[in-house]
Length: 95
Image (tube, rainbow, N blue to C red):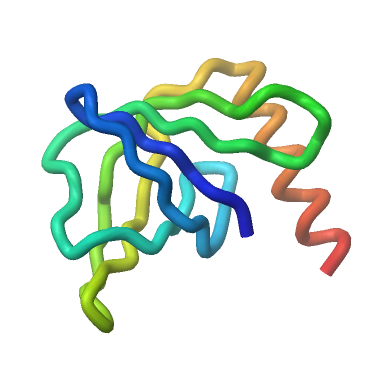
């Protein structure tokens, strides 16, 4: 799956996406996750630019020296939200 970039208080990190929904993304990250909102940049394979949103970690599971973070998109514009929803549908149709 693709890389997700987050920007938290001026520090950027690239994380591996594990799954994707219209409301958020699951990623593999370090054991410590951001405590508040952060910017998310997510390239989606639909020919457009990376999707931009604000997100926050709503679930975290520690495993094998890292964590799975459940990131919820908390601020995403309508056009990006519709684009993401269409992309998620295309992924489930292809499976």
